[in-house]
Image (cartoon, rainbow, N blue to C red; front, side, top):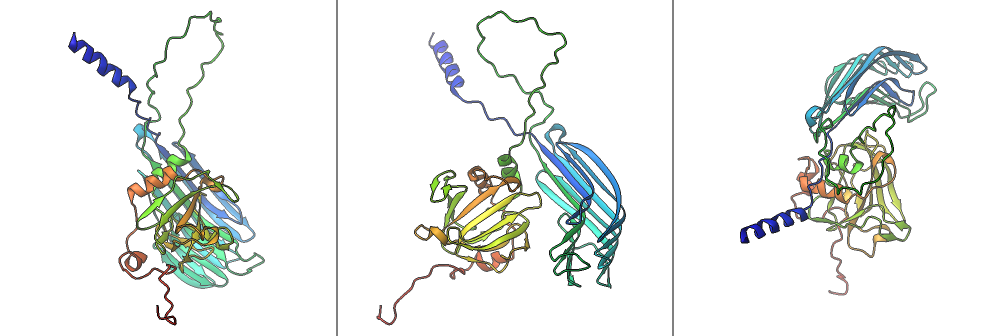
Length: 398
């Protein structure tokens, strides 16, 4: 009898234990374009959640000529193992009335388990009449009123005008052979979910089923923005001893708080969380020293209250994940508070989401590219740029 009571008690305790949360489904997607930018899109292929797409195209228009090109993408989530590939090729390229030409531009992206690798080359490149030849590594030139970059991340050839050229305004940008791919392992999307037991309902008369009615398809699980960002490859925004408050939505002077405040010592390094482009680097009365970082995928990240900016923090500058952007402080309306960085996440450059779950995932992984600023700011004991140091009144003899 006693044994039976213990068994029943154990069964009762088991019933109180909540079921483990369902694993997010695997994610796999890819995009490729023969050309894109301010002069229009040429030959765009894209897949999401698996599949394949191929596009061939050519174009001749003002400022842009491509004699022939192809964009191809593949993605799979079979068995929860995600893979994605994207490739783009453009031949006979001429930009801005021959300011930049290339015989051939190719770029490839391969993604697996959260990691994306890029490869490709540019052949027969000519910049402002000077032959640069072939290149398979990242290189850049500033000549003839243009900034030309090859083999950087997903862009085979990127040209941005730094002054008006051939009737095109300064800032006009064209990317040739543009690719991206993302793959994150997860639950098998084809697996049949186990039914959740529910109490038997009270019997009621049921209507005769319509023989012509089609059964409703089960709802397709979707990866939320929080899940995608938490599982992707990102760097935590502050280096060193830091604590992020779970204060999204709290009341503030200008409305609900749209981020989390990450508290750390004055002058602690503030880092780019992902590869992307900086913009709106400057100072405002409330935000203090602030900047935005936007990725090629379109996600945007906002930093505020920095004590100072790093030399790399310039609007329009393309940076890598882990790049030093500035230093922790309390500028703007944060002056009465302990030093911290206000950090926001805007998936797709839209409304802010609660970043706490994402920040916790990034902090737990602790990913940080080695070298560079770390050798200077990560090991020494001197005050960091922008740090608050002790002030003494030597005239008074104190």
